[in-house]
Length: 111
Image 1 (cartoon, rainbow, N blue to C red):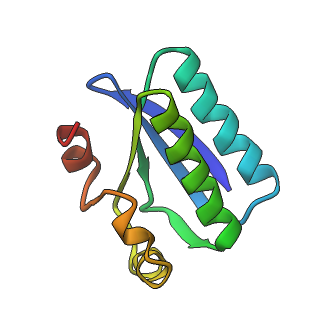
Image 2: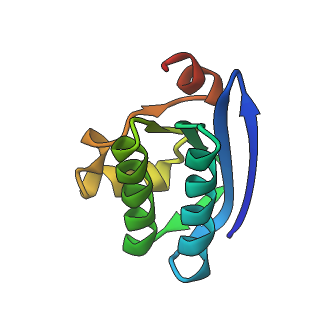
């Protein structure tokens, strides 16, 4: 997985690319979220458009990120969730945990 990030209207946007499967990916995403929190950026959107697949460890990474942000009075939202990831979120019932939007712009406006 590769991870890019930028800011839009004061909200941190993460763009993971590839497969979110754990291992170094977990550390990469975890460290980036903690860096945002340390800088006072507690509103994060994860743009899922380029995520090919995610396993249970990948889901755990997202849940951990959401929990970390909420424990620091922040929020994590998903954007551009692909069909495969949408199915995974539905099967695991995590669709009720994460707020998901059709675009980064919609997710940013929702804060």
